[in-house]
Image (cartoon, rainbow, N blue to C red; front, side):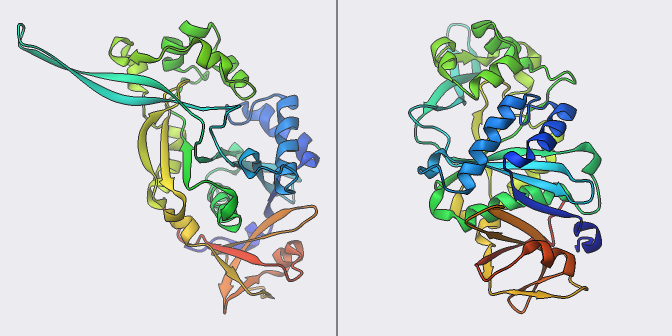
Length: 348
């Protein structure tokens, strides 16, 4: 499959910095999603951390959080975002999840056998790198350019570029089925009863402080005692993330029998060096300009100063990044290494 180069000339992917605050807030006001809440202060903090992470101003790579934006140059707006978090699970912020287990019970007296599902609360202090934060504005979904694939794939290309800064395991948390108003049946059945918070209140607080989870959550929950609605969402993928699940499965991720303790969304994991989208990344020796360049490869470069990171699409030809004049002009290549990842066959 070849992407539509003339249309993609209108887009680029960049490191998110504080200069994008207004546009990102506009996207958040429209969606107000778990990944991108309608909270200007939270977005300011997110962008500050992102800018410092790309610039390596945060010394410990495990504490860096990178936000990528898909920028519509014509409309001058953010069309989508994605994230890479250096490491989940540190002493100051544990990686918390439900381990989904089965427990067998049998009574000889009654000759009855039951298999119960147990949700065991686990706290990890040396966890994986997380890929997440994938958000695409509704106006840009289902377009022929497949912009969601670009903003998703760029995370793997970036990890390959800075491989030493990331953990040996990658994690992706997928959203489960939620009600149209954002209600989580698992949270209402478990989390709300132990904390008194709504799903959004708890999710917002947990991004700053996870102490309340460890202080109030039970060590284990017998899922068998929950309502059918709550049980049905455990480990299930919501309709909005089925495409992401397919992409992750093709790339080498598998369901880890772990779920989010708030909404029951499944956790998918993979060894970093075995992810096909990371193994498929490579370096190219330079840039050449050709108006007929096909959009089959994602090219990225870093710079010490702003914009820190930029990615465009073009064609890999003779070990060079072959770009349209418009893309080449924005890429502003000056001899630094260029990384490449083929996107020509993104699948369904």
